[in-house]
Length: 330
Image 1 (cartoon, rainbow, N blue to C red):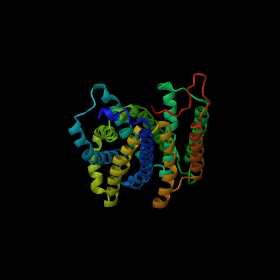
Image 2 (image 1 turned 135 degrees about the vertical axis):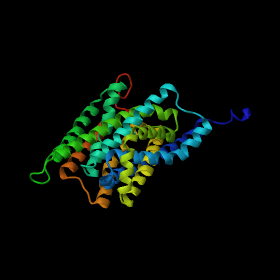
Image 3 (image 1 turned 60 degrees about the horizontal axis):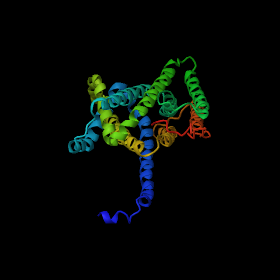
Image 4 (image 1 turned 90 degrees about the horizontal axis):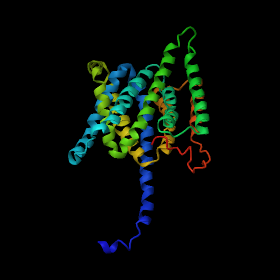
């Protein structure tokens, strides 16, 4: 065995191996984008039959059971569990992302169409960049500031369009509340992404996801009675929709997201999430016959342009560090 080591070149075999690994990360993100886009449509479709809290609990409970078949055997074999302070970030993103984000988004989609909700949530990468600049000392590159200003002007256009009565004499307060709920969900998701990144470096993607889902489900247990009564009253297709949300956009998509986050540079990974709103609009149009208002589409386009501007790189500084490297989710 030792005699064969000098004859082998360790670096050449590793170079081609990197490409399949990156390809797996990209493939995982494509799955995530499609399933997350379908989630906006699914929530909108079954929303009339489930309240925001009970829908969140049902979705998370189903996802926890499905992932348990994969995660629990791994844990029994490895006996590797988070210890002490390692639970703190898991508890944080479990409460904020799997719990709070879902409740806020579900409530927003009782008011707004799926496409508009997805467009508003898409400001999340910019919020991540701003928080990384503050808390991770990433700084504020010029294009981040320019892009953020453009993107938030797009949000203002969506809010303006939502604030205009669709029918003369109709109140628009509810639509503005939906915009606010979507922005709250985006903030919760942005904070959670920053917190989750170190966790997926220590634990497998499925485990990191399952821990967060279980925490979120436990937080939503007060809605258990409501969920039982609503499932009994809901038509079978609505219950099947709830099962779909638990299995695919939650158990599978959040796992493929965590897996991709562990393989691909976080800044580059963020760019692929810009495909979610367009995919959502297409699916929502095909299945629900919904399209955002003209103001929503224009504002969403402005948001996407703004987010794209934040991805532009600035020249390297004197210290040789690129201030806009995109590593905002580290």
